[in-house]
Image 1: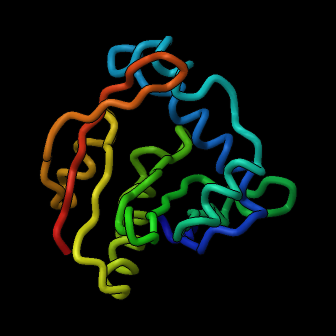
Image 2: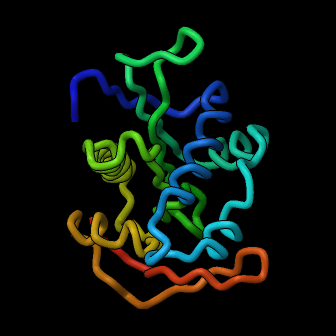
Length: 168
């Protein structure tokens, strides 16, 4: 990952950027991976910053900033990840998204490394994720094992993924 990128804990000021990254990364997926209808159900439009702040504030989350590129005088937020910390879902990776302009540049790997290091320090015994078709290879490369296909309903459409786990 280029030295112009830095990982920071999530804070409310990144909520709008996170919303846009989520939406744009989904709609950037090839139509042969997920159909246009699937992508529209998954993210019909960017969600509110209130939604994302509430969602990420209830977990442990990080963002990657590109300090060489600014938006409104601030470094550009180009990716985010979060992991659930509550007992019933502890260690569940809820989100990992990278803006299309930054995909293939090591951003997802750096975010995941940050999360895994933190989870190990916290004494988590395992991590799990419902990986998309697009992120399955990333998680396999990080030592996750496929448990089974998973399915999530989004606006009446069934989106297929893969439940994956990794012992720490």
